[in-house]
Picture (cartoon, rainbow, N blue to C red):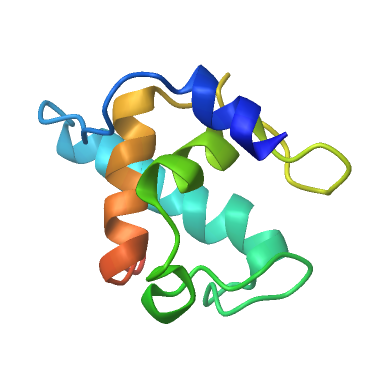
Length: 104
């Protein structure tokens, strides 16, 4: 299923350069609150795996983006495509891979 998700994410992974500061703050809150409910409020794992730079260093960015966009069949991971664009997902993945910011 992950391979199918990756194929559906055909465009190159590029963070949205026009991401407004308000939207960036919303995405930080989304990841910290909504993703954090399964991945741990500090993103160190829980029901879902850790989303720390150490845990993600060997995962291809495109695979991470596909998982966020399309979810994982047979798991608690839902698809987030209705709520985020591909550019926003690339922004999230980029920040997860270097250490996700805290909410302000």
